[in-house]
Length: 391
Image 1 (tube, rainbow, N blue to C red):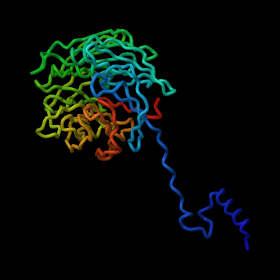
Image 2 (image 1 turned 135 degrees about the horizontal axis):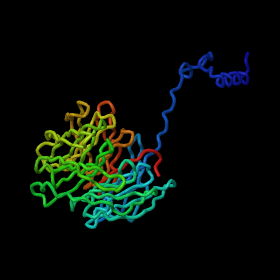
Image 3 (image 1 turned 120 degrees about the vertical axis):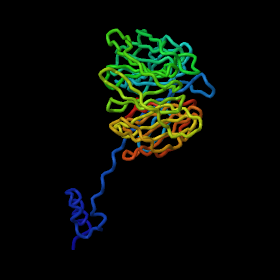
Image 4 (image 1 turned 180 degrees about the horizontal axis):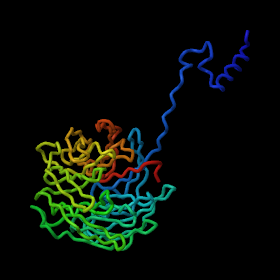
């Protein structure tokens, strides 16, 4: 007979040798291989834009953490000293955050993101216009582009190696064509570099126009190449490119439509197609922006007023959008949305309810499922999720 002590010795040897499944007399469930534990995914960082001059309003750029699986958001801190940071953009290096100062004396501000989780405001430069509402970093990382909504102009600033902003090198006013019906003048709403990297496009809501520029990367100046006119009163607000680079989608704020545009990477020419439905019905609603998944299969539109997210299937390698459905956004007036870097979550900043809502994205169908509780943030107007442990 084997003693209890010797039996423990035998089992220990079996465990050490990986022979547990062959040990006689053990319960069947103990002989089954156990599935590996899923890897732990690090929380991401979420930067939040707001208005500091409204009531209720924020006190600066919000910094939070988000769980990439559950979507739960946890507040961390606020970067103060940045007035009305209503739109945010990250430098390609991930070491500097940029914000517009959406005021009558418009500015752009740089914030250094230190590896120890601290933040330092590097300084502010004037945009030369009023009410800047959008900015983007040129892919090369040397130029900052911004759009002045109130004065209808776009600006260029150089960026130093440390991410700080230099004196403005160009300012271009949108003087033609004439403003659309009911508009007092041009209203530049967005400026973005096309996927080809050689052209910069500026969307003007007041002129119902999208301008194509070439950026001189030596001098930091914009040369207009062409423009695409939308139908009068469309109010184009935000342009989103398909990953293939030959089509782009316009959210038109004033006539509540979406327009699929052809795009020629060789010339930068944009060719708008026929306006189509946002799926919001006959009520008053103002489309904010479109998102496209990284694989180019689905697109999502944020609808202010209807307070919903419209899901489209992308067809014909980007040439068409087919409306699938709309789902409630879970807040009031979704001003801005973003996909998490892995595409698994969609986050919406709801301006009037002062909340951020989160949805899980089904990779196969593109369906959106609400997850977690709304995160409170006053006058939430921009969400910028960043992967990894964050700074």
